[in-house]
Every structure is written in structure tokens, then in C-alpha cells.
Picture 1 (cartoon, rainbow, N blue to C red):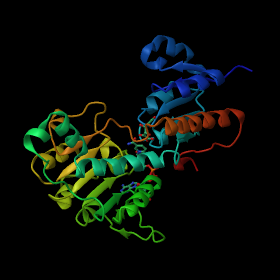
Picture 2 (cartoon, rainbow, N blue to C red):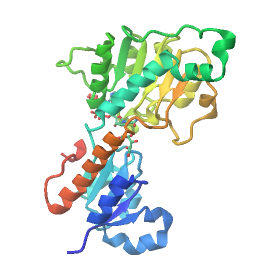
Picture 3 (spheres, protein in one colour):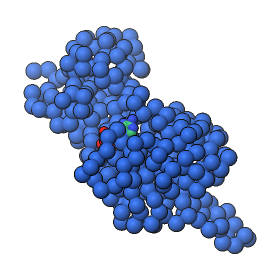
Picture 4 (cartoon, helix red, strand yellow):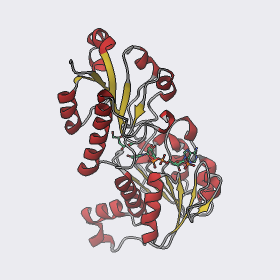
Length: 316
Ligand code: NAP
Ligand code: 8YV
């Protein structure tokens, strides 16, 4: 039997692309590189494989009459038009769980990075300023501080567990309160922000959370508060955040995600009270391998007629 044909919609790592090539006939981003060649093979394409930031719009799926599955190597799938897929009975899969540790680790790292000013301190040493200017100004203590988590799902809970080891109090907001979890629930991000020192954002992206963190939330966080975003750039109003950072409305921010990746506004780069990382929260060899394995296994399961390992919740 001929191998199923797959379209990739992201630059996938070799440890996913190589096994994909063994199991399937792979058209690597052909819709972008050679639309004429893509038009010829499009009727045969049965699967799409992409990353958490990939766009899989209705218009792309409409060009693929034989499409049976969309497999995303990432837990976030806000770039996939899930309703359009479900209308045609096409399952969408993602890679939840296997990246919780790394994303939580980076959220905590960004919190320490900005509060203890670690990148700034590194520059201070390298630029010889320690010798000429003496010790750096005092930083902000993290242990024992108040943490607010926006989105207490798989990763949010992993962040909370780590924070407890630093004697931090934990409060949260989410779509619904979780009576079984012993943290204070606040019905809105604004109410939560008013009660904490560090506000960590870890919701999905997409229309449901667009600009959930706006000027009002930042005002509530206040001049001693820090914002950490490891969710999606779309969840934070970036223009409002820049204004808040420039004017001392909040103390600082640690950001792994941005509204127009990979472009980061110059105004943000010019600020000293931010730590910026290039959407790398899950980017360790161990975790990316686990994500790749799960994305591949979902495709294999589908084409072998076995149950999917991790369909998105909308599918169930
Ligand atoms: P999850 O288990 O589905 O948890 C999502 C949480 O967000 C849930 O607590 C949910 O509330 C809450 N939420 C959803 N919509 C909300 C809204 N409008 N207002 C307030 N809270 C809302 O997801 P996860 O596995 O923890 O992943 C979360 C997200 O992290 C992913 O979707 C992805 O965008 C992002 N992420 C980023 C990176 C990175 O590299 N920076 C890596 C991995 C993941 P309920 O519990 O009430 O449903
Ligand atoms: C990756 C992510 O950047 O899982 C997600 O939602 O944002 C990250 O883990 C990406 O998905 C890798 O493909």
C-alpha cells in the first residue's frame, strides 16, 4: 500500500522530519515554496503536521479534499481553524503534558531573571561596571512573594508547585474556579493582579484570551508588580505593556512570547526593566523529542486505525 501523503506547515526539527519521511510521503511546506507543484499534489494530501505557532486556516484545508488529520507538535493550537476541521470530521491533535516541566521552569526562570536582574547583572560584570561603579542596586526578593497565575491548567499547576517550594503564596484566575485546588480564585485577571507581586500568564492564545492582560490589569498590578508571559503574545496588549513599562506603571516584565513573532518591538528591546526570550519555553532536547514523538505517534495511530493519543478537547 502506498504511504499516506503529508504536508508540513512549519520548519520541523530533524528528529520529527526524518521519521515522518520514513512513514509518509512528506511535502515540506510545498504550499509556500512551490504553489504550482502543491496544486498538483494537494488532492492526495491526507495529513498536515505543524508546530504550535503554525497557521492552518480554513482556506488551506479547503485545498485538501482528502485531508483526514492535523497533527500539531505543540500544546497550543490557536493557529488551527478547529471549527473548520471539525465541520469535515477532521481530528486535530496536539502535544499536552510532555512540556509542562520545561514551560514551568522557564516561567520561574523569567521571574527570577527580571526580579534579580540576572541578564542586567551579567552585562554589568562584562562591561566592567562592577569595578568602576561598585555593587549593583538592590533587587526584588522572590521567595515568599505573592504569585498570581492566569490560567491554572496543566502548566499553570506545574508553575504553582514550583512556586510553593519558594514559599510563595499562590492565587489564580481561570475560566472556572477549582474547588479541589487549595489556592485563592479571583474571577478576573484585574482582581488577581491587584493582590499579587508577580502575575504569570499561561492561558491558551486565540480569540477567547485576546488582550486579556490590558492597561487596566497592568494598572492593578501596580508599580511594584512584575508580569511574566509564557502563554501567547496575543494574550497581552503589547502596546499597553510597553507604555506601562516605560512609565513605571509596573516594575518589570519577563516575556517569552510576543504579538508579532519573531519581531519584537524596538521600544521593548530598549527597556532595561524587561527580560526577553525567543519563544523557547519548551525548547530543550528532551522535551522537543517527546513532543515530536507524540506528534508522530498521533499520525501513525490515525493511519493505522488506532485511537488518537492526544486529540484537542474540542474533538471529544
Ligand atoms: P491547559 O491545561 O488547557 O490550561 C489552560 C488554562 O487557561 C486553564 O486553566 C483555563 O481555564 C485557562 N483559560 C482559558 N481561557 C481563559 C480565559 N479566557 N481567561 C482565563 N483563563 C483562561 O493548557 P496548558 O497545557 O497549561 O497550556 C497553556 C498554554 O500555554 C498553551 O495553550 C500555549 O498557548 C502556551 N504554551 C506556551 C509555550 C511557550 O513556548 N511559551 C509552551 C507551551 C505552551 P479552565 O481551567 O477554567 O478551563
Ligand atoms: C513551541 C508552544 O514553541 O507548545 C506550544 O504551544 O508554543 C511551544 O512548545 C512550539 O509549539 C514548537 O512546535
